[in-house]
Image (tube, rainbow, N blue to C red; front, side, top):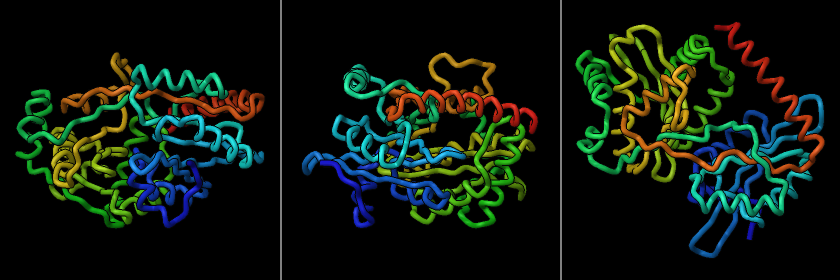
Length: 339
């Protein structure tokens, strides 16, 4: 059975959520940014439940929507039928899925079989297909053995230099985070959400107890800030920003080590590092530095099943894809100009 849920289902919904982007609090945050949200719960008896949280994004100038369901389970036929019906009522032309399931033979076969009955096609990724995941259920000694020697040296150096890692969920802490976020995106030429987006996200996730803001301080100056999420025994590292000063003290390396220890204290068994470039990374890619940094902690490279679009209106979907390609060309051009 699959049905839309109400506020009374919040606890049960979160217990079944596979990822913070499927959590109740993330949906509340997205509502605050003006996005409509649909929450569905699918029951398979007492033992198993799945949830599907879909955000609906209005296409500018026209009364059409794009549905987005990130990091859920791979929906079965019943779920796809229900979601397709809601999408039609919402005047959506497509619903984009990026399941939080590994790309195993069985999982890919399920998607292939679903594609026989539904217009389910590979779509443009919004979320990375790969991630690094670190088993933090083992002892600190075991974690240290897995690390690259240079990584271990770097965070030990930060400790010796006097870098301190503290949790700071205050308004001032957020302002420091945003200042460094602006600096980082400009320096790297990345596109970032607005300050209001990050502020609403930080506030909602922190107030729910699943968000944490950490900073690395050296001689009274904040060098690095990280946002961490926590859900159902898994710690996540979605956002980070850093200063270009005092890079020699390796504050980021100590931040990662302290985040790992924090996750262990919280009872988390896994640390998802929220993305990587994949098994054969391009060393010229602007994200390569982040990829190599995460790799140094001995995490396992994970491949997810990827991005799939449930097409509701074929003609409008083609127009949408063309417009999206043009939009990203413009965004990349703006990022280069800012840099």
